[in-house]
Image (cartoon, rainbow, N blue to C red; front, side, top):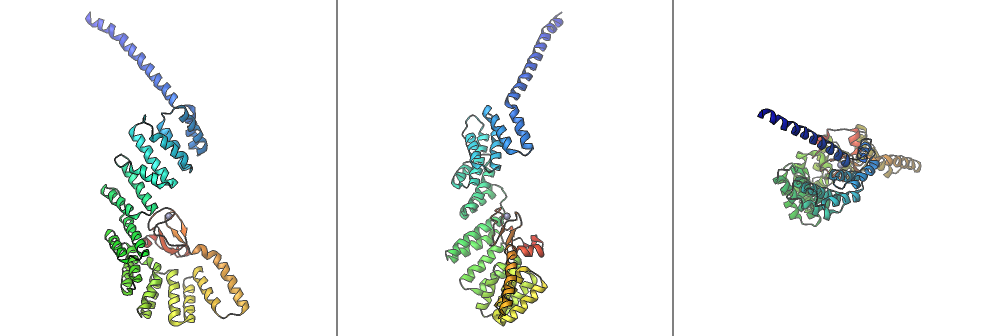
Length: 400
Ligand SMILES: [Zn+2]
């Protein structure tokens, strides 16, 4: 009898629990619907259809209805940033970073994103402040990487080196080639201030960090060259040749002067001929032609250039050939014809003589070790666009 009584009590309890569970389920569904009104789904739809403007409007409507939608705020700020509306992204992230009702992780994320916004907007002091405040949070690695970008942007190479070393100690991957570039940049500043000893110290450190830094060798040569130690300069450039010969055009002119200033013009010319054979480059060729002219006269230089243009056709070299012809004593008519041809060619050669980044395609008239377009180091090769287009080489061999 006792057993049956238990059943009588249990049955209503089970029914009550079922009823409560059903109510709870309904409430959760109602709550979900409250958090995600139709505007939210509209926004997602616009996003999927790549209509960010309409998506922003729809999401703004949701955010205004319910201020607890943290993820939505992040998504919105991200959209603003992608559209280049950094000031609006900053406002959303500032709002999140100052809200005490949200979790610490969300606040840290907002501070990190705020730092990135400031970095993109070029407000570097505020970016540094925001990113530095994340030193003991779960965003410290990401913040450290952004800080490194910031110091590179500011060209504060001392801070960049310190930051990179700290990151490596924490196990983050910072290429040693980047750190050696930072030391090379410091050396460049020292060279500009005629502090040659200091520059040498920086360059030796650059080589300690990265033994295969061709830039450090080239710059060591520059330091010796500036101090008129031409033989030592030539030695440094020979080391650079062993590391990566494709960078020789950057110092070709100085190599010739160093040979000339040590009364080794014939040896210098021979070296340039060898370089041009082994590592063909329009820049080296033009230096060789000048050297040939200094040693054997204009006619000989002209013949050599003509021979090279035939062997390895190039508009840039042809332009140089025409320039030399124009310098000759030509009749008035011939002179005008040559002038016209040269002007026509010049329209193309301006584009052809640019250097090009292998990562982002950025083109520049001057050579940069760090691409101004994508901020990558060593992504621009010291070869003119024309050479890269018409005489393709394995760019891996060209990278420093
Ligand atoms: Zn680039």
